[in-house]
Length: 513
Image (cartoon, rainbow, N blue to C red):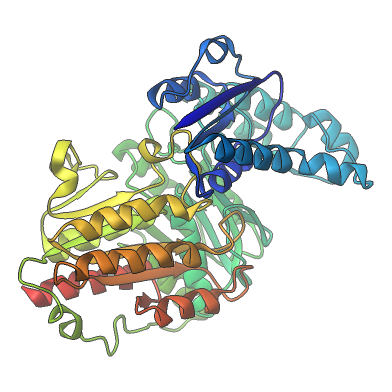
């Protein structure tokens, strides 16, 4: 094994670009590991943990770019660095063909695009607050994709936005859709009268696509960032989002999506909802409905139910689909050996993982997950090797220095093989997110790993049931119907919602019992 680490002084690329590039390099057959990132302290610590650090890395500033690769041999290392150089310089080649140079500051961007009213911030966290503040001063709504911002900075920015009548979506906000334009990770959905405020990215995506599939449409999807409903922030942007949608003529029904807020914040939100004159659907996953809700506020327990209720309210008639209609779990449970009793869920979407956790807990009892809030359900030590386990592979422990699995789904393949080696694994549950920002061929990337996982099980006389959910619409660039068809052609069960897929996994294991 050989490795090489370079520091490129004062060279900046946004995190999405670097995550995508890292994924492409990791896909190279001879590459063992790759870290391509800005030289923040967290990333420098990561290099030490994978034995790719050196004195030059220690001296690097946060404005410097780290390029580090380990490969099987010198030839593979040279190929990787040649690919990195080609990808990093591709933008310069486009400029040489006559493309305008990209603006290098908020000020320059505003001068060039006077009509712009939203700024997306994707810079290292230590600079994100400064850039967001400049955008707010220019009268722009802000979406902050960056993370690693302090709670104090987040609250100050949101107070500033509230005072100026501007939205501050984030930090760590991955999804929004404003006037039908998807921002960062978002899906292409039908326009319509349902407006959503979401403190979770894939939760917002799931509600949007289910509204679309049920015949409704979306006016706006406003992200708040995952910490907005903490007491330290006070739900500032959730409240501002409610007010914005309540005043929006296109929005006829409101939907709120989040994990349970702090009780004091929940009380403030419900007080605000009493003032809204439009129907409101509240989905606080794992949360409880407030006693004595006003008639126009409807509490639901899941993401699919949120979409179903919102479309019903919009149309003025019940819209309902029978989940798992015609599905017989015994057809699949009878293929399992008596020792196969566990569900292994490997998610790219954190909120989808949290919803599945709620469902499997109710149907199967004891569950473990890295997104669990209950102490007894949190993963620790060897807990990941036992029982029903749900992993959000987009959490920091899996993405530190690596691209998010929605950008580079191949990172999930090793987890698929690991789950297949466990003789107790009965069902492997997978999600695939389509839309802006996501990988163009997520399903194809996983098919070889699934085939190999089946072969590993067959060698021991076992069969594993694979169940999947494709989050997307026929309007998304990845060809929604093709992705579903590829899964079905490879013997993978495909379901129409995350809830349905989780229920099916639980039903198969339950029927075996």
